[in-house]
Amino acid sequence: MHSTLLRSLKRAYAVVGLPGTLLLLGATGAILLPWLSADGTRPIEDVLRTRLTPPLARDGRGGWHLLGTDAFGRDLLVRLFVGARISLFVGMAGSALSALLGSLLGAVAGWRGGGVDRAIVALGDALLAIPRLVLLLVIAALWSPGLAVVIVVLGLTGWMAVMRLVRADVQGVRVLPYVEGAHALGVPAWRVLRRHVLPNALGSALVATTLGVGNAIVLESGLSFLGLGVQAPMASWGNMIAGGREWLLVAPWIALVPGVALIATVVCATFLGERLAPLLTRPRGNVSRAPSEFPADQPRS
Image (cartoon, rainbow, N blue to C red; front, side, top):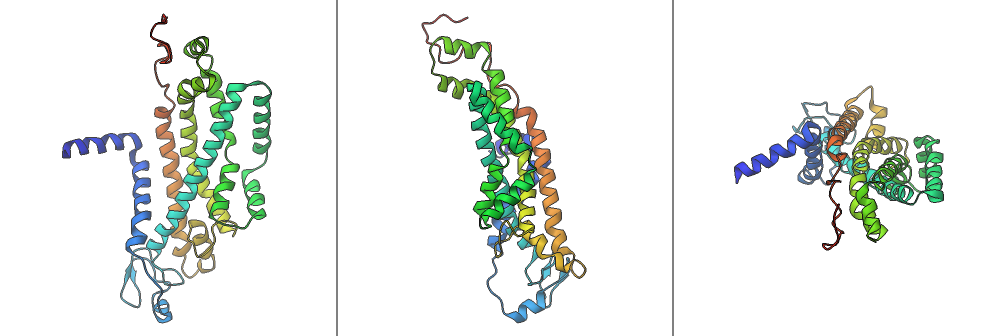
């Protein structure tokens, strides 16, 4: 059993590599560490004795802090993983929403063609012509800042690139012989699209989604830094960096710690996407075989 588990871990590591492992460890820490280190309200005397403690030092109560404390005496390591919960969730949810919207529109555009295709592509081109940060600022300013608003805004402004990838893949797959054979046998178009076209077209979308996680985290942090994203008392890396601005000369670690975590996460997500690209964009199935919808009594070429 142990050898089987070890082989499974080795195969998983061979797929995701060091970037995926670091992201998994970070996500695990974001789930467990704040829960294990939950700290309730404290008297003002304790706050004054523990605030602005440097990294690798002890506070006035004798507690040791790996990354130091902030202006309110909160341990930055715990605070970092509390913010990771929000930043990672927003990044993954916003990227997944944009990938879902882009995949649906790209599949429709590539499958239907004609006026529908031109209309969807024109809409995507118009939105791509506007810098995404400008779109984010305008949309976020129209509604009250919050977690749900940030996720929806990221989804509505990030689907265009995924749409183009899925559209191109669908257009390439739909003219293959086995797809034409399924059409000739009367297989419904929606089933051909679902069973034979989309599985071979979604690899690029998954890669774009993985690469988009880092971009979404950066954009969420930028919105939170400007006060248009996640609002206090909820912690995200963006508002943690914003909260450390006024202490840069006295306690630079308050802003430096979430900033380094943000950069490391974006780099790992980017490398993970590049590592998964050859695996996810590999053609699925054997195009020399007829589709499974072919009846058994039909001759197969």
